[in-house]
Image (cartoon, rainbow, N blue to C red):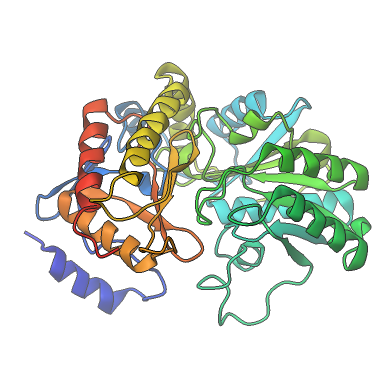
Length: 424
């Protein structure tokens, strides 16, 4: 039998340290909201593969559909010889696109790839070059996506010159208000960036890596107005928030704001790699044949899986489950925050089943070292959780939306134990 320590030694020798691991446990199998490592230890999964597994690990409907597709074909490249699952999936996403215009969808393999192509589409449609993003945002690790990301370390530091024409506005979190964000944007557009050169503004409806801060609806509505006034495309990055995670199919729906372009990935594939850009048809039609594409994007296996994901979300009412799960998590964490026998933490925040809280020191300041320690203690209890935030001070919880409620309770009890015995 393989051991975690042996595999970790092999991993350190064979794989670059640039790709970090949240744990040193190696998975053997996983089902729904449970994972077993190579030594047979069981864990409750409160990370969901970073919001990929909204439908849980190895949902039987997804696995059965993919097995059936395996016997047909695994790859042709959609650009060489197309196939029906790609078209059917695009049709389904077009029908639920979070805007009223006709939509079209193109598929890629990763969220960063979707973000980069969303920007390409916006630039081609507008004939402009610049993009405005927000501090604290995370849009990926490829060169343009990391430039759009609003955090230097570890995503930008030491990687040399980054693409020009990307500007950042303060995101309203902590001591920064919506009004201050909008004043900064107005100042940028009047003093340093010509609005006529701005192709797009890109924003997450809930900041993911930045700390699970929901974007205020007043800001989203103001951005829509600014974009309309200046002919700028509004891109919404739903890579982490999409597909029922926040209580609606797309988080942006809760604001009443209609974007022009949406980047999606993660939960769409139910564990199989697929990403996409959903855009208003007249916008994406600006790109000529050959201007978009990718060899593996929209693989037949991933498209088949994604079709099942959309059906499972509807059939198992996962948006409603996300709302229930999120409320239960927020109630429990809110109660933990009031106790003096646990590590000091903030009140919870988030949207739907996308919940986070900060770990604090005795003075109420961020305590990233203790947050890391909480994650370690949780793992020893049998719970998989992750950190996030500007300093790594926040604990984020991304429960599979299919989790049995008794396992949700079990995981909450493990989190409570992990918050005991700290030094904060």
